[in-house]
Amino acid sequence: MSKYLLNYKLKFVGLPLLILSFFLAIIRFYFGIKPNIFDTKVFAIYSYYFEKKYFVVIENHISEEIAGVLALTGLFLVAFSKEKNENDKIVSLRNNSMKLSFIANYIFLILSFVFVYGFAFLDIMIINIFSQLVFFIIIFRISVLINNRKT
Image (cartoon, rainbow, N blue to C red; front, side):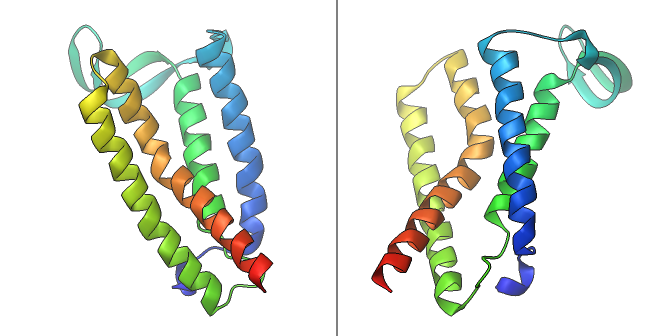
């Protein structure tokens, strides 16, 4: 399992990316600020605002996309970087954490299907893009902390 993990130092690249994406998302979604620097033309395989377009160049504000890519990249680097002292116990904790995060994420989704309606459900689907990795990181970090206290 650990042969598929990234170098542990990449975790320290992922954290700043995650923090940067968080601030960019707050500026864009909480404060509603859309700096003109992010208005640009982009190639779209599929675009659907008022009409469907395929394989075209469109004008778009890309702060949301940048925040999303930074967040996913940061989460990925944090989640899949080795620990400094990766051993069999850590691998076991990682596997168990992945299973628990999968279960937690699907419970979250099922509850969302039952209790969230309308356009709010679209927000839940966007959150779901990130929630699997977030749940994994939280569960894994807690598992490592508990393991370290036992030893």
